Image (cartoon, rainbow, N blue to C red; front, side, top):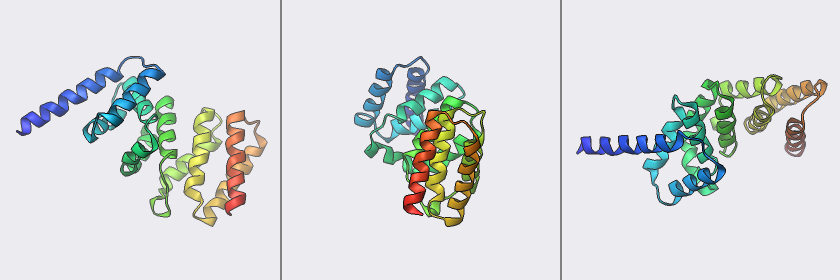
Length: 189
């Protein structure tokens, strides 16, 4: 019986890997997300999640892209995977995968109890890293706020980071993220 279950999961994994290894278009991604959400079960979600760590960057990126098209009620499945996603973010060197996983994390709830200082440090570092893509810097800014907002001393540190950005000519995406976070800081702190 155990061999049969293993074979089923191995076949499922290989099927999903094959589907994600080719160039996908937005319609393909939406169709895959719909298929998993409506017809698939947790086994399909687990397979897709496992493929986020695939050695083939196209497979990993496509898996993250499919997750990014999950409906909000289906993204709840990722709540229990938040710490693993954070670990992935801090390990990946692939900017596309990094951006997609940061986007997923931004859609997950952060609480006082889930603060990880290593991830906060990662976000704060990437906010000021001028060599990083604007999307990654902006997502890190939003994620830093989501983590800092519970702690006055951390919001003070975030404000200091934002003041460093004053001397930089910001591209529109980062300028908007900065303005939005400053607005949230004024409203809530």
